[in-house]
Length: 165
Length: 262
Image (cartoon, rainbow over all chains, first blue to last red; front, side):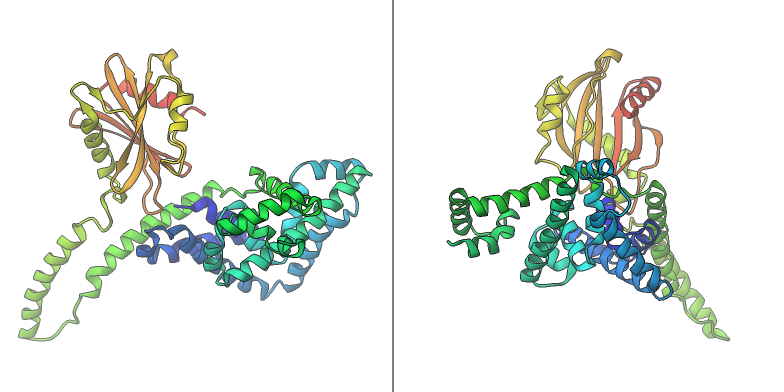
């Protein structure tokens, strides 16, 4: 049930295949124990909130002994999306035309913004559902989404300008 | 509405989260304000880019299999832990005999309890094929199979399910092999809504049931014969399938192979 949504969210939150896989397995196990809640109209939102918590647990566990590489990874993502340090104009043009630059730009977003934009645009959930999954008020969902989109648009303009020049 | 208000509500409008009155005001403002229209256009462009399928991460098959195994194990553990909770410490002397008697009664009761399906019928592995046969027989009315959408054109049958089910069932044109597409209907598997796609082969009706797989049980690749009907079940992606027909086993295998071909 909803395994694809779960993995998609987990992979975007953790930005790593192995961590996402562990989180989904852990989350599915917890979800299975609370099986009664898995029925009903809000089953997907409930399941995704379990998965999200499992992701945060996994990240906390791993960050304990990999703090530096985690930060480096974050900055690497920013470079890939924005400054494009070692790319030729052709590379940049290609990047702007497909979704790779967007992929990198989403990965470079802070997690708070990344999770709401993924839930909204990729999973097409409502503000109410997103609020329940991330455990924040609807007003916060709205402001985080706006901020996430502003940041992504900055990158989009940048990529287009570089591609055009 | 002024531009400052419009920009503040732009995202909620885009996300269809505004009430009808405010949404109408927004539409009116954006139609008459080039600045806000440009901002809106950028948001729409970003949305279009973000909905690219390439941005979705697809779960690796190994993970899928691991979770299915885990879920099955979970069922066994849950069943095994029930009688264990009711075990008593051993006691010396005559009291042990009394307890032995009690335990025997309890054990029998637990055995009966464990034998009951823990979850609704569709979750247990065996009854699915049986259930599919029941649904198949129920649909075979004297005048012909019950059909909601009758068409031999798969481009007419498949879209019919849009908005009726939360997945698109597989519909194939196998007429070159002699399997004639008759149509489809909404059916069910236990408490799950299912699509039933109906084909005919030399007078034999074929029902292809598909429904969203539950996490607790996956349909194994299995062939069985129930009350004279041949049944084949399998799972593909998130969807479980069951094919039922009274035609030859060899023909059913030929049909299933064609249906499952990539």
